[in-house]
Length: 441
Image 1 (cartoon, rainbow, N blue to C red):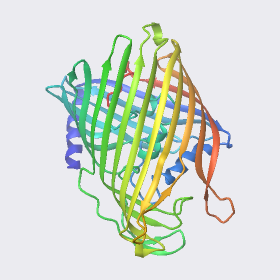
Image 2 (image 1 turned 120 degrees about the vertical axis):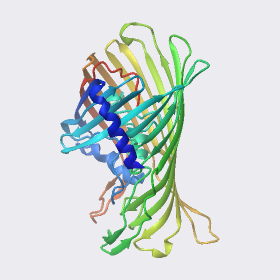
Image 3 (image 1 turned 45 degrees about the horizontal axis):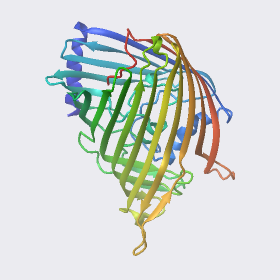
Image 4 (image 1 turned 90 degrees about the vertical axis):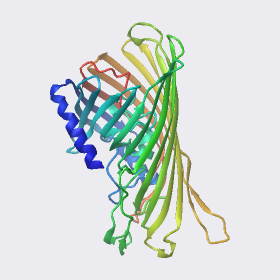
């Protein structure tokens, strides 16, 4: 099935030669510093282990992050591509990203879309999922750092090979967008895939063979969503949405992690995820967007229903269930204080509910482990003197659990840290008049 999708996209992309083409290029550079001497740029990546987005094994491919944060000045990413339209029925997009300092490059999106009657369309290829309210490319964000709940629970975002069927009707003055997606697996947050291992070396120096179930046929991930936008008047508009995602298989291979586990173990099972969001937008009707503001909020909830298929110290536990629950939310607002100036505020929290349930020996009740949350408050000031140039100054106050070797035994323990981050971002863009206020993915 996946091969048929890829072939279809290649055939459709042949129309690009005779299509209207819009070239896209975005360069993202950041000057970064923090109160931890530059170390805090990796704290969120360390916390991914606490949130079970592990990369100890193969674990699938990376999510939608465009480079991390390190002390000093850096070119984080270069995103290039093109949007094309062959007719009023057929269009598509091809985008790639280069991480110069990591020496890496990858094809980020490559899809074709056919428009059917009755405001219906079908899209196929490698695509950015419509899950949630923060399914945007990094250059479209109002902040330097990525949305924290999406980073922790979806490894930065969901981009997979697959098919999307979408219907966009107008009902009672409300623009609806509802659809179904069938996607491949690989996202480390929700659909990670591990391979069986022979002669695996554990953290304690033991040797073990680990067997994982075979990966399911396409589709591994299913997603349904409903989003709505309504203009209340010329100056007021509201929007909201609900998304539900289910992964038929999610696999993890855990080594030692501070505050989580003291032995290597493997897990395999299913995962589900919900998103609910709402936003309000005010158009002041003044030149240069001055006085315009927007407030938006999103809540994410994730559940992993897994089974223990390997344990370094206690093989008698194999087959026992592990029920993992974690949530997160973000609330943000932006206000245009002048035609070329915007101020943004954002509050984020992940792990208000963060627990792992496992059975006890009968007749004892189920054991539940609880973990600390993560919090971040951010203020950003953006200056855009021209469409191609944007300068953003951002400061963030954080509270995370991170891993540190506090007693010199070579193993990290969970240490709670409060720290500040400071960023000066410059973005240069060439997008042929692309409207950043509308993200059509």
